[in-house]
Length: 154
Length: 233
Image (cartoon, rainbow over all chains, first blue to last red; front, side):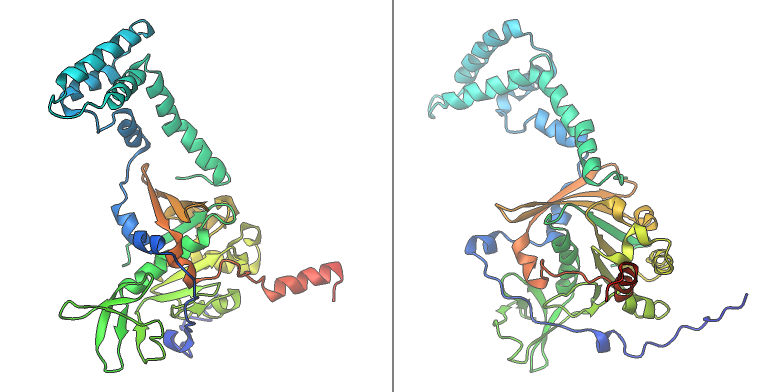
């Protein structure tokens, strides 16, 4: 078998000769849209490359808990909390938060209750964590696979 | 700019999910990152912003805003980034590349060192893979790295794309569009990596570079063949 086209033909008109440029389309944009715009490449550079598990852990262990009570809250979220002691623990944690608060600053009762309730809810039977791990793991994978038409996602 | 590995990105998502927008956004960012504004005086300054105005930075650190009618004032924006696309682009220098153009230049060095955008095209539809044209496209897809191309394919479902392209793909990007916010969210899966990256961006900044309602034409020879089959004139 002979190679008929073993020479690369010359391009009659190079890229510059063939390329065209039309003015960009005129589109109106609001001031809000202008203020928040950031290019896709910049956003891709800045976006964290987290695994599903890492995203799940960030949700499971919120970082904005009160620093002084952080260790206690971490333990409560990891441990299993019996429904029988849930309300008692809630009261104790709220009292504890009130006691730790700065007496010279206004007291945010709603925030304290919400914080204690959230921590205890996460720990209650570990149910919340299991739900989230399922959601971030198998459930999400299958949803993406379905969207991609069964083509796989590496 | 170019890796040792072929850069093949498959953008997936239903109609109106921001695939074309994302496909355009990649070369637009690259184009303007390397672009310079060239003034009638001959001075050249790098472009540092494209939204909503073109901004460039002078050698002494001043930021200049190009007027909207910069073209008529003799100011040019030039970029070394080459772009080929099977749909129309606005505000960028590019070569419109349909299947005929692609096949005509298959053995020439023209389609090298560039971004190549293929949107909803007959070119990469897996149903055409056993036609003569499909075989050439498959051969082309095997030379992406040698050609130092960034190939960006936009299909609604990954399974619609030609098998080799799916195998060669280095990134699969799922696009979702939030109409209320005008934000496109991408879930990026990279070959060989279990982690996924999620990125959101404002779609407004890229709308002026393409027309979302542009129809991608079907090649004439395919229409002629279909006409012959049904006896149409």
